[in-house]
Figure 1 (cartoon, protein in one colour):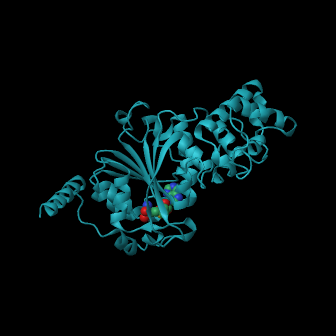
Figure 2 (spheres, helix red, strand yellow):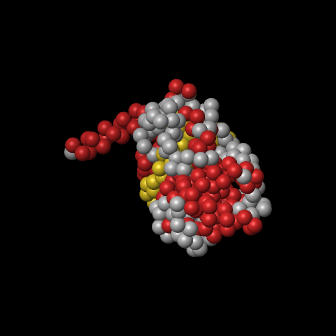
Figure 3 (tube, rainbow, N blue to C red):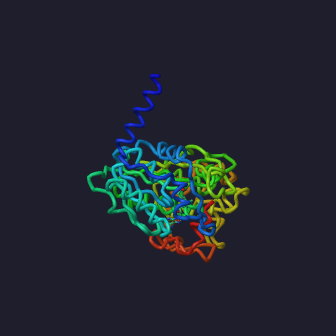
Length: 354
Ligand SMILES: C[S@@+](CC[C@H](N)C(=O)[O-])C[C@H]1O[C@@H](n2cnc3c(N)ncnc32)[C@H](O)[C@@H]1O
């Protein structure tokens, strides 16, 4: 009886936070508004309220926090965010078909829900949150959360953009170490969190782990989504690190890591050689590995973060002597000049990071 009373109280507290009038369920709203998922847009809706609530709970305590939800669709997760007591929720949705349903939620939310129609890949959150929520970078994370169940083909480029924003402390991260909770294909999350020596260790592991503490929270079977995707969906949580493990510019770290992982099963010196023109490759590689004190015969996935750190610093030291090398890229279609020019518009770099 006591347990029952306890859970009722928790429900009452949640309801008090939301004070929403009763609404049809998300799946009823989808039917009512004829919101069929568009396959070309990789839309898969999560209709199970318990699972939506679990995603929100796993993002940490969100009561009285400000949340930006990306890709709300018919608003299942949005509803859970409101129910769990967020002070304000901004949703960024690309597909205008969802506006009527989101407006219904907004009207019921007592001014807590704000809708932005737009593309999250270009959406700037710099001025979205009240300035008094900002905390110094070294402090605890601020009361701001980013949450999203996006299509897989959007979620991976997005996390790379956001990692770069974290490295520059811009976008949402002008406010401090803002946390993110995002969904990906399960095997992508396995790569993100893969430790040294793990079969899934790759470029994405180094990039995610360098700027964030990345954790795999739980996995939702594909059958929980409508329509069912071919894969299971994992929820990953990211907390920006106070100090990255490789404290160098994003473009430089990405370039070294990308080259090293170019030949996954070969000695790491083979891929690192792509950092240099052929006529100076052998000499520069010898120098770089000696300065970094890294065994050139290790495979890329066997390298620790500390070894990547030393390799990146050794490469940075070579660039100081020979700045023109920064522009050198063996794959001509990818032009990297500096942090600003390292942009996603060329497609290749960001998309192929796995
Ligand atoms: C996989 S569905 C998930 C919908 C909802 N969050 C859920 O869990 O049921 C992805 C949603 O992200 C939206 N979306 C896709 N690309 C987007 C982008 N670039 N910016 C904003 N929203 C996007 C889609 O229109 C869709 O509503």
